[in-house]
Length: 374
Image (tube, rainbow, N blue to C red; front, side):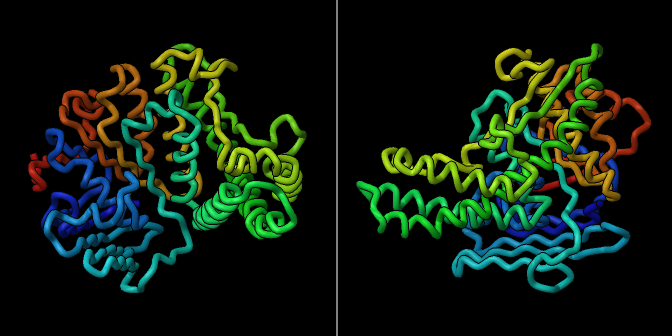
């Protein structure tokens, strides 16, 4: 997939910008605060109508401007698609369209992989960060997952509100909790199943990629930590997960009431990186931890390619955080993408194989919200 044309109006620090883009690597140079990440955010927003930063639409409108507007022409599956995203501040109204038709309705998931410096610390961070990561990645490739997640979160909020308000368990409380628990069981079981399936796919490819990143063979595993473990339940089987969730919610009702929040469900899950069978967070070196994340991101690229469409990859100043050896191996893994956006404050910190070898790449420079070739 390739973004061929891009127009940005009143987005972050860009007042008006038009770009004609090519396939292959696109190097985006600029000092901090000039708009490199904002450019990637605009492209991401064009596909998913939201920010990878989790920002509100109003925060992405250029200062003192009434709206932002993004437009792009995308080549995918041998067809051109015209994408548009606009947001009007005063009316708090967002409009998205594809080929002039409101709403994003396509028979495929946009093959986009985003990699930012914060992701490199994924192994060392807490469970909440890893849950946010997997929810972001799976919502991006599956509208079904995104819908289940949204419905699950709404039910969870309502249930937690009830648990905080009530002081004791009676029939009235059980009746009020029933519809919310029913939704948590239904949508939660599907979230668990989809997470398990995708982590299994990521695990197979990430394990191979991890060995590529080290001169000596090292074994990487991704392990999904959910309530199904140690209970003989197959996480991929929705019906079995539903039954387990129902039993566990009933069993922990009293404890949930005492604590004032729901203790059972995928909102408490996590996944682990294991190196040589040991918890990477505790026993792996800093380099191994970062390489594990690189291996995972490369697996996402490979999965899109295996499904028949080479993806678009955005790498936001990640290479400056890696040593020279892993820069080269990392870029080699990433080169399977059809179009690659690479931001950097110092082009010299990019992989030497990109800069020195006969790789045809585009060069852009960002300065105070203006983009030019360099």
